[in-house]
Image (cartoon, rainbow, N blue to C red; front, side, top):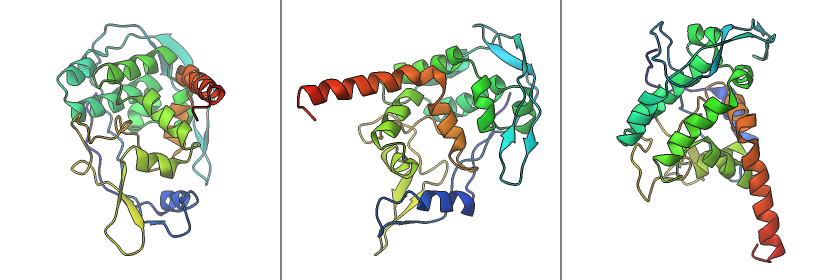
Length: 246
């Protein structure tokens, strides 16, 4: 399956959502310019490791609020390869690795996502935990644990699951040179950081589509694949508090 680059787009609905999470009353955000989903094709994926993929996708009933409900899909075993993702990461080609990650999520989400060219937040639940963990482990392994979904989740938890603060920590937003404190999304792809350096923020990659709001990213970070990370984080905090380090 081919992928396409992301594009810049103004989205007032998501901008309004972000303003509910402003760090203080003096901070404002410009309308976001963010991520475009990859387009789908019918190319065949090479086969190696096993995973289950929905071959009979759930049907969607879309309401005026853009929410969708799904019936449980019929699942058939179909292997999928993570070799290309590993190759890009091994070569430190993080831009291509980001594109391949997006392609894999679309494939793993099922036929409807493939035809559509992007993943609905309600389809994330159908992605096998083993597959999300495999993607995350590859990102962490080739970035000295600086990139990956589990890294992003820990940052998200540290900011009390406030997405505006998360976007700032992960470097997805930038401060504008204005008299009033303002922030805006980085423009894809030139303003994002595709190299692993000391200046690259933790959790900066992989990117997740935020054009339709934060529900997709929330679904990924809340996936059962990363449930242990939340428990581990809470346990560490308790230990540090007991030792009076915090």
